[in-house]
Image (cartoon, rainbow, N blue to C red; front, side, top):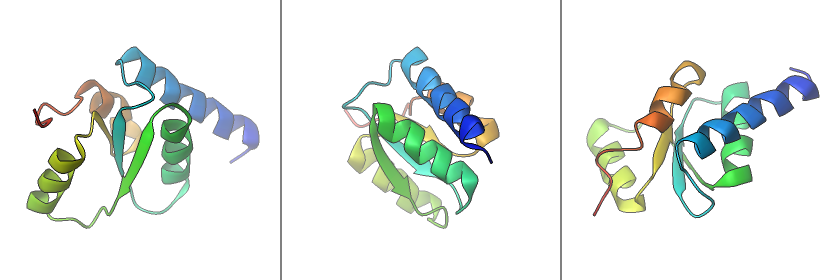
Length: 95
């Protein structure tokens, strides 16, 4: 991956966050295995929001608990799901 590609993907992540009204103080959970995608997601999210990387091996009940407890505004899962994940801004958001 080149720096130009990395910068482009980070800018895309920030654009998706802003488009979906995810702001600086909002928490965004990232659930990705180690690799280039987590680096891009982490840098993109951290540039515009509060980043909360999570273990992709969590069981569903653990994941539900942590997402609710942290009051995550959005969830980034895979590059192909990042837009729909951000669009989904966690309906299970704690009230």
